[in-house]
Length: 123
Image (cartoon, rainbow, N blue to C red; front, side, top):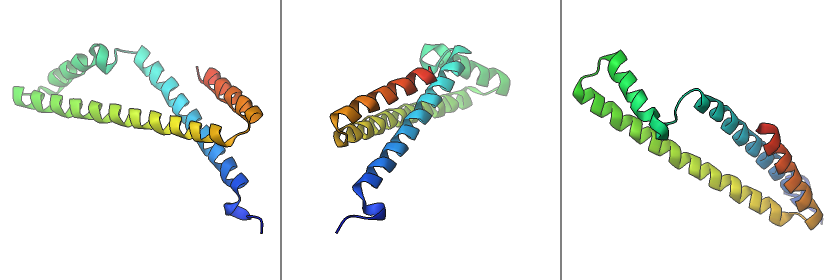
């Protein structure tokens, strides 16, 4: 008996492809928007941390204790953000690899072109 509906491997593969392509497009779009924001000022690693801390101190008139606490919170946030970003990169790469394993050689070539086109559009 042939698989029907949601159990059909072709349906699952197609939905996975659509989901992962959408995820890749969203991630690349996010990176594009994020790059635009970085162009407007230094990143956290390039001195943005000190600029942010100085702005908090100045505009909020933080005490020394408050400044240290805010600094710790911001550092924790950036570590958390970087960890999430690394996890998202791993999920994307894993999903792409899983799709590639499902595809036939000629489909892999087309999939590779689709991903390349998508990356060019976002840049």
